[in-house]
Image (tube, rainbow, N blue to C red; front, side, top):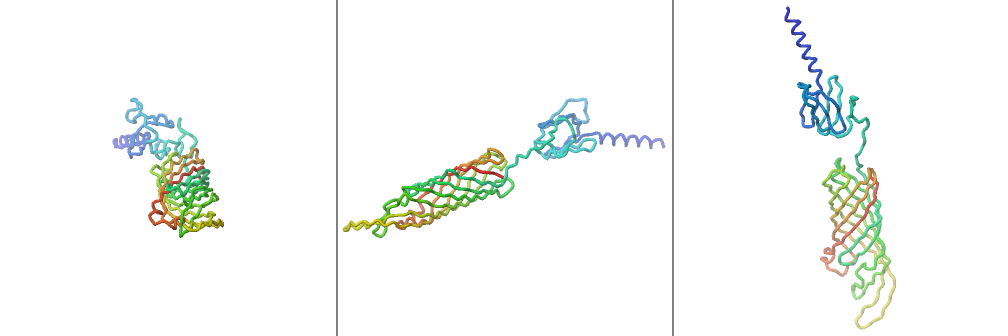
Length: 292
């Protein structure tokens, strides 16, 4: 009968010893039995439980998943270098939590845009607006919807194009609207404030320009200049390159550089199909926007 009190005391000692431990759980799945001394915004300072008279150790806070203290209180760090979700009141733990996440939506104003065809029949400045939406939580893929308005130019239509014995001389009173929807891929996650994006877009451009018509006969040089309106359309594909920066959580600035070719262009009625397709178009746009 004398063994019963002894076994009871032994069991009680083991139980108290087990509950006297602090347990540190790391992001790698390890468990450290310890006596936590202090926690700072960057590290956890502790001693090994089995050697509390020994040296002090420190563990980066970013490697800590949670700490379970001897009294059952839990600090849940969730692998982040910020304040824990649950507070134990220990020294060094932040009392507030800042939200640095960036939004999935960007509405931009384009104060400066420029469209240029290497052949020289487009040379247009413009302005526009754009909407971009991130399609997944890390922001690697997005859809972009820019709309641009282009102003006057003195080089459109390649002046003096002859077609059917008549030459068309383009004027400088030119305007057009371009819609350029596309998909963009960002290698870096959206939490990065500066990111490069690569994408593929299609474009549709619609415009009109007054032009003059005159008789270009070899034998008869009678000129007439009635003003008419040339309504045209152009469709094609573009590869887009972008460099974007979130200056603050909500203020966004970006630069786009696009290059592509038209697959349909009714401005070039007199040209063979290859002259339409192999007429590269370059486009530059500066964007200032709101991210939310």
